[in-house]
Amino acid sequence: MARRKRNSTPAEPQSTLPEITARDIHAYRQSGQLGRVDVYPIPEFQPPDEPSSIVQSVSPAARPLAPAFVKTARTAPNTSFRFIIDGVSTQAVTGPGVIGRNPDRSESLQVILIDDPGRSVSRNHLGYELDARSRLVVFDLESANGSEIIRVDDERVECVPGKRYSVEPGDTILLGNVTVGLEAG
Image (tube, rainbow, N blue to C red; front, side):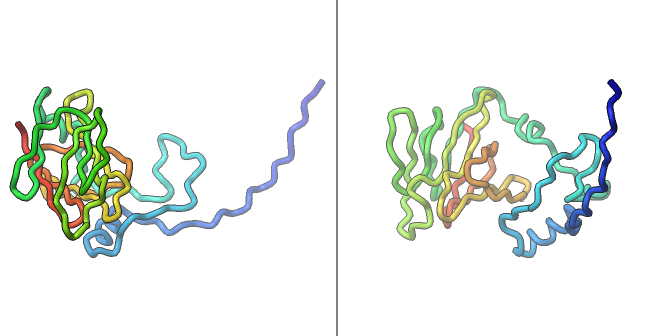
C-alpha cells in the first residue's frame, strides 16, 4: 500500500515577545524596578544548540558569571560553619536546621532562634543543611519578608522560596530586617 502525504497547513503566526537582554535585567534590578518576574509563555521546545528566543545572550564585554561549583570549591571538605547574629556566634552547624523567630522544634533539626521584636523574621524563616560535599546550603521557607544573600564580592541574590543556595564564610544573609553573617569554624 502506498502512503499518502498529509497536507500541511502553514502554522498561524505566533505573537512575538519583546527581547530582553541580561543588561536590561541588570539595569532594572539596580534601579529597584525588578522583583520576581514571571515570563509567559514558556516555549514548549527549544533546540539545544539554538539561542533562547526570549532572552538574548550577554555580550563578551560583560563579566561572565562563574559557575556555582567554582565559587564553592574554596570551601574545604568537613569545614564547620557558624551563623553570626547580632555579633554573637551561634553553635556550630551540625546538620539540617531552621533559623527563625520561634521555629518548630524537631528532634532531627537544629534550631537557631532570632530575637526580633519587630517581627520581620518569620517563625520558620530559613532552612539550612550541609550537602554531600560539606558545603552549607540555605533555602527560604516561604517567609513573609523573604531572604537575600549578599556574597563576599557584593553580588546580591534574592532567594526564591524552596530553592537551595550555596553560601560560604564571609557571605551575609538578610532575613527580613535582621542581618546574619556566616563564618567558618
